[in-house]
Every structure is written in structure tokens, then in C-alpha cells.
Length: 435
Ligand code: XLS
Ligand code: NI
Ligand code: NI
Image 1 (cartoon, protein in one colour):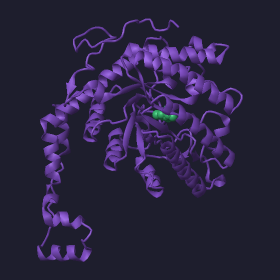
Image 2: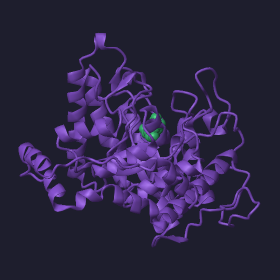
Image 3: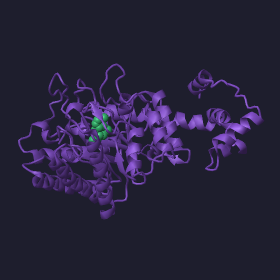
């Protein structure tokens, strides 16, 4: 289908280019800290916001009027979306894409028909991937749109819904595996509750933990190599969500012994809704050994919901990239544009402008982060702040054999009196602005 007006793949032209559909900073082959920008950033285009969302909001319906949203035959529309996904990837020079089962194919009358539709479109995707040399970053199952999930997916009070979810995830994981997907994502939009007066929290939490364990077992059974990624979000659509943030998921992973198989897919807007910064969630996941992948977007700071705007703020992206580099970079993960253009951006090429501008902003963030690391002053300041822990007597306090009374005895013997030191925040903020 003829959709975009722009026909040539976007290319790097450098910071002085006046061409709006050219990269000014994202130069895929440029080496940064021993790795190409393409390999650092591992961008992905998402199906749902890019090709499925019609531009509605809670107060008004569609604004985009895309032709394929109005086709009589939903399988024909699915084929058009598949074709357009690869056209989008070609134009943006992006290697990866992501989808929910329901994004790529229509539901049909029952689960059998849904599975058959998903498998049929997956065949088309497979051919296109081989032809265009594109890859699947991750797949997932949509277990939040249909009314059967209104009281939860795996945490539904009705065990039939739990069973249905098992069948749906089995198929979505099979399809993701078949397409060589590098991760499998679980976002539990309905895995929470509205009111405690009708809810058994303990039972629902156990359902969530057991469901995740079943998915991990199945992943091993079929030899799926990538991690299962959980995507934390504190609320919306549920009022109280069990997968609130990285810290709460860590608790669940530890209690069910899943911390080796499950990692985090962290989204900027979800971090903001949980009262955290994006970099906080990345740093925490990395320090717990569960950093996986990123859903890249930006929350509107004036509204309290998931606005999923394209990430454009270079200083914020600098701090984000600094944490990604400190985490050792991506292995199977990447940066998925889980972002939607505003509903007034109705031109087809607005989709290209959004991705290109955000890719450039990420590239600037990467270059800035690399400069901060090369400059070394920030890291030196942090090292100095923690340098007391290099002394053997201090290190020993964290060892297994340490005891409270022995430490107390040393405090009295050596007359230890802590001397407060400046944390130098404004000096460091100035330092970052000047790299
Ligand atoms: C919604 C989530 C969703 C997941 C995939 O807020 O971000 O888009 O990324 O189910
Ligand atoms: Ni997301
Ligand atoms: Ni989101």
C-alpha cells in the first residue's frame, strides 16, 4: 500500500543538515566506545502505536483515518499492516520490531481461530524478515483488551481466565520463538485490582507468581534462549498493580526463584508514574542483575497518565544512556519505541519525523554519556565518595563473619566520629552540563 510520502531510506547527513528527514546525530556505523551506534542502541519499531492505534483518546474517537482500519476483511488489513511494518523499518533503517499477538492478527470467533490467524500472519512476517533482513526484538500476548480480561489475566478470580491465558501465552511464545524473537515480554496491565472489598490479594499474587513460573518452565521446554521480560507499571488500567516497579517485581522473582530467567523491560513513562526516574529503574535493575530491555517514550509531566510521547529530551536521555552503558549495554534487549505520535499528527510522515527525531535525541544522549565517561571526573567523584569502603577494616563490616558488637567495640576503641562531607550535587550538575 502506498502510504508514506517520503520514499527513500533516511540517511545520516550530520548536524549541519537542513533536511528534516535525515539523521543529524544517529550515524549507525559510527564507533562509540568500541561499538557501533547501531549496536549500542538496537532500535525497534512497535506495531501497536505505529500501525494499530487510530488516534483516539477518552473523549474522542479516531483522528488518523488510516485506510486499513476500515477494511471489511480483517485478515486483509493484517496483511497491509505487515507490509507497512517492513516499509517503516526500511525507511527508518531500523533492524527490529515488536508486537502483541492481537496487533498482527484479528481475534476471530474463538481461540483456535485466533491462533490460526496469528500463525498465518507470522508466516508472512517470517518471509518479510528474511527478505529485508529484519529481526524480532520481542513478542507478547495482549491479555488486557478483550472484556474477558476485565478482572485480570493470570490474576483473575476466575480460573478459566488463568487457563485461557496459559493457552494464549503458549501460542504467542511459540510464534515468537519461531520468528527468532530475542526476548518474550509480559506486561500485566490488568494484573492488579480496583477495590479491596472484592479482592483476595494473597491469592492473586500467588496466581501471578505461579503463572510466571509456568511460562519460564515452558520457555525451557521449547528451548527459547532469550529471557522472559516483565514490564513494570504501577497503575493504568488497574488502580493497584502487582508489577508496580522494578523493586516490587524483584520481590516476586526472589520468592518464586525466577531471578535467573526473568529480566526487566523498563519504560520511561511507567517509571515516572511510579514516582521514579527512568535512570533509577535502569540502575536498580542493573544492580540486581535483571536489566533486560527498554520501552522508550516520555511521560507528560503535567498529566498523570501514560502519554507515551516520543522521547526528545537530550539531558534526560543522556542520564538514561549513562546507566545503560554502566549496565554493560544491551545483550538481547534494545530500545523499543513504545511511543505514539500525538492525535493531531495526522500526516503519514509524522510517524517518520517522530522516530527520526527521537533516534537523533538518543544518539546525542549516547555521545554525551560517552563523553562523560571519557572525561572521568564524574566517576572519579563517585569513587572518592565511596573510597572509605576500600579500607580492609571497613570492607570487613560487610563480610559474613562481621558482628554488631565487634563493630561497636572498634568504634569505641578507635574513637570513630563521622565527619560529614559535601555531596557536591550542584558542582556535578554543572559538570554534566559542560561535557
Ligand atoms: C502499556 C505497555 C504496553 C507494553 C506491551 O502501557 O507499555 O504497550 O509495552 O504490552
Ligand atoms: Ni511498554
Ligand atoms: Ni506504556
